[in-house]
Image 1 (tube, rainbow, N blue to C red):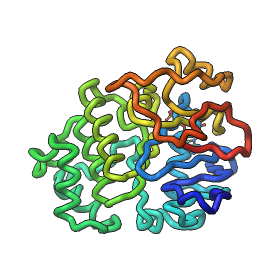
Image 2: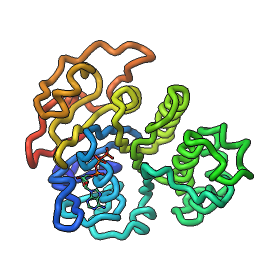
Image 3: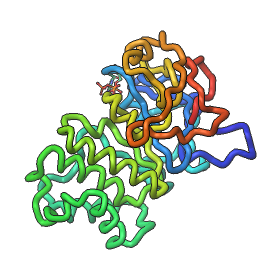
Length: 279
Ligand SMILES: Nc1ncnc2c1ncn2[C@@H]1O[C@H](COP(=O)(O)OP(=O)(O)OP(=O)(O)O)[C@@H](O)[C@H]1O
């Protein structure tokens, strides 16, 4: 948790957070902060520990260190209790009950979620973001294309009427058109005050949605900084931990988003162990 009592609580905050498969730490000493209504990206090579980190935040993996959701300490809470605090996760597998219809899948997520918003309202709100699903409500989820199933997976997260959405590589395998739709959807979520922690391999998606990124490798954060101004050619250096801060590039309207971070934290810094890292 933040040491500064005057700072409003983050939507999500990890402090010295480690996550274990058995006795092996797949995410190590991760500290990060995600402000309400912002999107923060986690990039890194295969096996870096990104999915494990999200699963651990959602409560499915043994952890040490601190996790708080909306200012509430959640370290020891079950996944269900974390959902009630407003956390939802969309795993990499595009989870849906394939035998149930699209509408039934949405209803199921609402029933097992926080029900902070009436069902009809939550459904209208989700379909507003993914209109392609509106015409498929009666179809079995198993009949959807991969991209449509991804939209359904994100909609299911929204039906839980969440405040914080964890997205694990939501654009994997999608066409450029569907990726653009998903990018727009993430921006819309932020505009509605929903916070997003986005695991991605696709830097372009992170660049278009996130104000801040953390690069994970070998389970630890090897670099973090604002997204604006990162030179695409330096991504390999960031992955290897050899990244150097880049001078901020002038924002190009419509292409690069203005950073949402406060000016005093608008700087790129190689990560040091134990250092709080945030937006
Ligand atoms: N259920 C598990 N049991 C044991 N080890 C696991 C398990 N799941 C993942 N691991 C190991 O934890 C490490 C991190 O895996 P993780 O899936 O979190 O990485 P990732 O960054 O999400 O990779 P990718 O981008 O390929 O999905 C890897 O070494 C992996 O082999």
